[in-house]
Image (cartoon, rainbow, N blue to C red; front, side, top):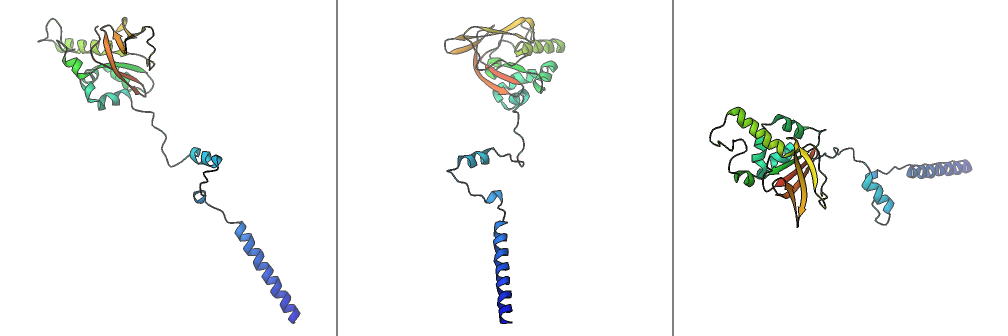
Amino acid sequence: MPRLARALCLCALTLLLFTLTARSQLVIQSPHDVAFNPSNPQQHAHDMTAPSYDQAPASPGPKLTECLTVERKLSLFYEYVREVAPVMKRIMSSTEQTTLLVPVNQAIIALPHKPHQDPADAISVSEAGAKSNAERFVMAHTVTTTIPWPIDVSRPITYPSMLGPHHRITFRREGDDVRVDPGNVKVLAMKEASNGRVVYLDGTVPY
């Protein structure tokens, strides 16, 4: 009996040790518990590129309408744009690309007559006439493509405006400035949108 008891105790002890060893090998670590090792670049690369399913996809950026809405210095031009349905449709589109040549507010205020007025009679103008004048003004400052930027102005580059093939916008360099013809208008800045570009001008383009 003493021998049998000792044998049973040894068997029980062996079984217990085996069980504890097996359980320690089956412990699974959570990925969040893995310590970052700065000497292991592969681990770092994996951590940085692993997708996060809790994050929303990146935004494609604001549309032209949003760019005009938030920029106070372009508010006067945007008031005219809102009255021109074909241009509004383009700048709200997700598929059509457009470049807007936008005179800043000060440039519009400095005009001898407002864009919707007739030069010959700036005091009285019919509603239909005002609408037509505003439409021509906006279309003369709209190009139906996205111009590349920075634009290569080592030689003049020309694009037709929405006003028609007879009215063309030319970008050229003059000293350190980029200028637009007709009008020799200075380009102040450029803002990119998901459906085109806004080019800030310090004057208006003749049409």
